[in-house]
Length: 223
Image (cartoon, rainbow, N blue to C red; front, top):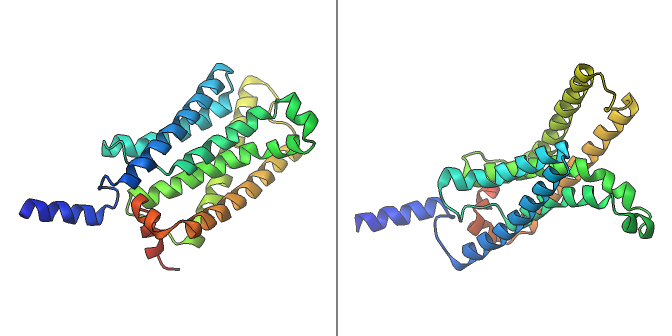
């Protein structure tokens, strides 16, 4: 009886502790989406695309971290967030598609947002994992701000590193100041869009699914 009570108490504290059919389906969909992310990262590795290798490995590391720390293969991030992590890499590589560029006039401009979305989606993923797997609690306005600030901070560190690399190797791959400012502006736009998408995502999710994923705690943080 004591053991049963302890188990029930643990399940009530951790909504991800139960193996409900909904949780199993969520995990399976997430595993399939993570396979796509893995294949895209391997593709970036084969092309020796350094920036996208780093972004892919970072995304995969954030995906695997909850599984490794809890030793529970069912502790995965929602599948749609994993798909969103794949989207910037898909945008980046389809920018090289001559067919799309010829038939969709605005596609080349749209793919310029790939870098912006990649950084903001990593911030998005970090925010979700902090909510699900740690004691950190954020209300929606702060979560949106966190995603935007993370994207800008990561972009700033990348540009500084890019500048240092150019100085060390006597190259000029970073471009002009105007090009750097344009990239940072796009990243700001991407971060804001992803931040508001996050707020909409939490609002649109059903209460039952939030409880299954553990995101119900988001609503306990009051503005």
